[in-house]
Image (cartoon, rainbow, N blue to C red):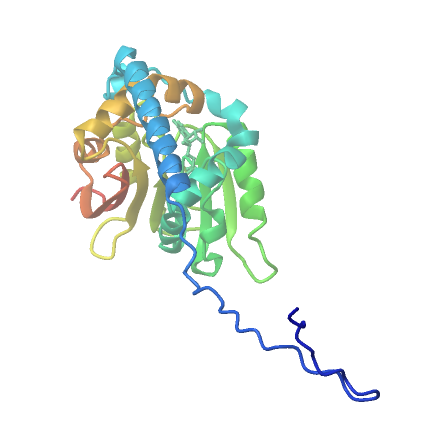
Length: 291
Ligand SMILES: C[S@@+](CC[C@H](N)C(=O)[O-])C[C@H]1O[C@@H](n2cnc3c(N)ncnc32)[C@H](O)[C@@H]1O
């Protein structure tokens, strides 16, 4: 009978023999493969959502009657501003920020110097950007008492101990004869500024002619600087503006489908500079009174 193999017995007190070496080879590492499925699914959901939204917009818009773009055919909704005054700033600041409007407002207000008139001042959204040190006086005008009260507070917040600028609030129709600047020899303003005013006035051409009458003219003349919004360069944008104009004007008192360029031209102002932003709907205009 064969004998089982005999292993040498460890001697008493001797260390145990080392375990036999095992060579286990680690599997080769492969970079983890990322599944593209969630990405494709998300893109599909987004495309589906967008197409639903576009279809919704199209069906809603096509049934809306386009509004006229001429101010004489548009009802005056400026009375809504009294009720809007308390929520105006909180309602529009974010959309203005995303459009970069604070930069344009800054550029506008930074041009103010000497005796300044700001027409249709609203809640004074440009107040924060004035360099008061350059202004001898600032006259702010609006036909909404509530909007003007908010603007007055915004300008009062700009008062520092050092400034001697006189800020005067005038509640009136900016298309009616305007008061001359306080304590000025010439009786005319150095700079007239207005932002988003043409859209809300009943007769913007009369307003612009009135602004031209109260600003200095001649060689070293004054400037009228406008930051306005209205019709686009693109027909498809104008189609959307026209159809949504009724609802927008009821809510915000402003007609966003007016042709700003045409209204300025009809006013007779001599335009020195025009820039357009946001598909041509935002207008930056520097002008002087007609010769
Ligand atoms: C769209 S808001 C713009 C306010 C402000 N300028 C801004 O940039 O936010 C238009 C403003 O024009 C004022 N407004 C409308 N018609 C006016 C008129 N005939 N005379 C003076 N202000 C008028 C309204 O009361 C309102 O405050």
